[in-house]
Amino acid sequence: MDNDLTIMTRLFQDLKRIQMLQLSGQLTLQVPQLNQSNPSTWHIYFYLGRVVWATGGLHRNRRWFRSLKQSCPALMNPEWMHKTVTAMMTTDELGHWEIQIIDQAVQAKVMTLEQAKAIVATYVQEVFFCVIDQPNVQCEWSTSKELPQQFVWLDIDQIVRSASLLCIQWRKVVSQNLNDWDFEVSPDLAPIIHNAPELQRLVSPGVYQGLSKVLTGQNTLWDVALMMKKPFIAVVSSLLPFIQDAVICLNEVSDVAFPGYKRPAAIKRVEPKGLIACIDDSPVIGKELEHILAPLGYEVISILDPLQSLMILLQKRPKLIFLDLVMPNTNGYELCSFLRKSPLFKETPIVMLTGHDGVIDRLRAKVAGSTDFLGKPPEPNKVIQTVQKLLENSTAARLSENLVNI
Image (tube, rainbow, N blue to C red; front, side, top):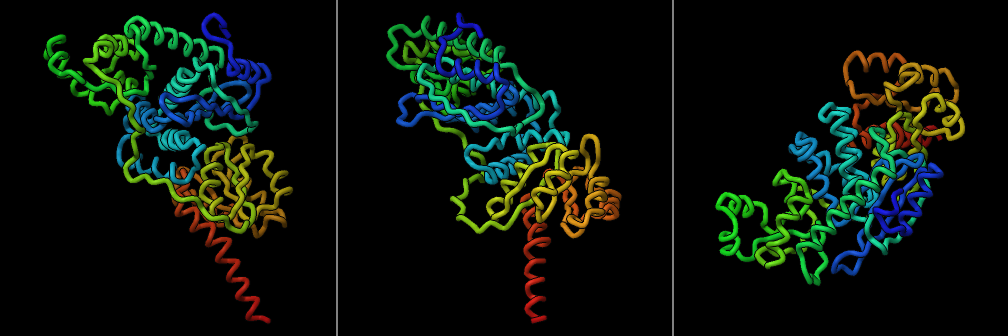
């Protein structure tokens, strides 16, 4: 990495080590926040030394809306907003619900692969910009083989270089325009017109009209740049002279909320009910099922390679198997038929998962020996109903039958 672009800190040492050793896992960063007693938390995910996702901070939802407006406005409609709220409510604070929605949108052909790559790149770039220049970052590493997304793996050197250049540009325009400024400026602050008559005197009527629409104190500098459809540094550079003269002020602003979203209260501990396996080459599907079923007491194991599934199933002996219909090297029909020939899995419930929920697919799945059939992406209510029907209700029925026979 280019030491002339950035100050070598603990963060850079950790990034170098991750890259050199080709590590997979999550780097959690605690960054001191402006005028806040608690630091902001960021999460950067790596796979084999490459960056695959990054999120966190105080304005996580704002970043999501900006990325959609810029790369995929189709996901701004009520249907996908509802799906997003559902994903947020079925994941914990550290979960990457954004990737769940991206994966669902790509599978549904609402988002192209190029759009998905653009969103991932935008997220990662903004996160690195926010943390790269912080001297007091606290880093914590946790190893994991989980791959949040498979669209694009980003090179650490390239990300650090571009984020560092953006930081240099940011520091340069701030230092040039804010003389003797004793207040630290952040892109997360929201500009608002403080002296309207003076601003009207300084700019043309057309410019003032445009500024009055975006400088409301509710949009951060990141937001304003996107709304004005201009480069971030150019927008900041044009606003700073007015900020220096107190014609425009900068306010702190909270994150935006999703309509209808309310994070559920902590779920009470439940008794463990057993293991469920998910055989799907997409790690997102296994993670979704885990978020849905873990609160009910089920442990979910995700098997990404269908060729290794038999060995794992023999070792783990799950109570139920979710099986993807379309996978590399094999398909769900063949694997289901193979499992049914084994005495160990002859009676095990097998639920087929597919994005093509047609009559012919259902018939073929039934012939192959599947117990049930669900569409993708899995809907929480249908998943819960299916599991309860195949495991809990059947167990209760068997217990009742045994009591009658006593």
